[in-house]
Image (tube, rainbow, N blue to C red; front, side, top):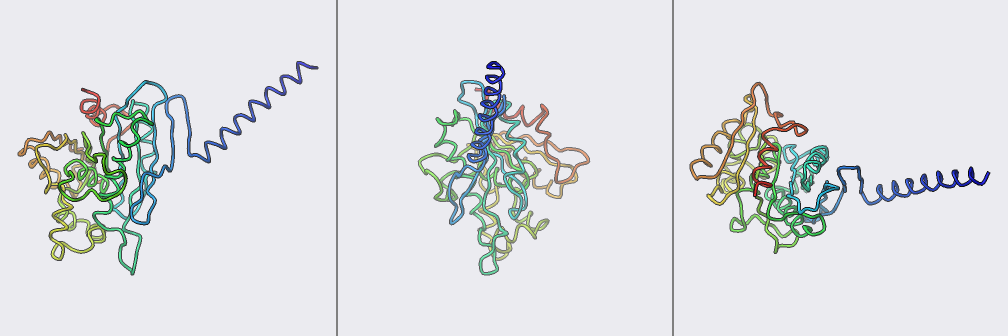
Length: 299
């Protein structure tokens, strides 16, 4: 009888422990499996009056420090969220990276019937996330000298801006600990806009709210928001992937020519019979992971 009581007590203790852990995980946003620790809704800074949040995935094994990856979602600067890349950051952590997917301010928020958060708010937010990772490098075992960024569509435009702009351009903002650099060492551009005037011509619905007007009225703003404007020989290597039916494909070809002219490593992959949503299958080995292995783990 005593043995039966002891067994019941042990089972209840295990159940209670699991229940408590589940409650704590829910409250803190912490989830763990054998390969990856996930933390959700971490505040990484404040953009104006908006608390900016990210989800983070990191390996459970290995001493580190690990290279870091930032994922930037696409949605025309006006919709979607960091949830778009939750599966991908888990995959990245399983491959030995500390990976985050971040929210940034969107143009669908209105003030006086106009978009409240226009360029360069979104660039400021992305740079803030990079600085946050460097500021927390010790806590999360991050190699702050090996950081990459992945973006899709509007997020890819922001990823390119992280790659080609430094503090001399005046797009750093004031979010986060400014003593840390916002530069990255590798960029993956999945169907991003590289020339904002050309983007306006094919995606006016998204670009005009983002820019706060049209190119005729705001030529300097469009120039400043155009990644091609800022390319220099000190920029990190870039991998660009586009579908062959992508309306923005000419911009990819212009980017490719410009980067090769200046001497920045650039690889352009055009995927056959695909449109704007032609991005990599992150669960499989391929060009994207090979690119990061070479440029973030190769040293």
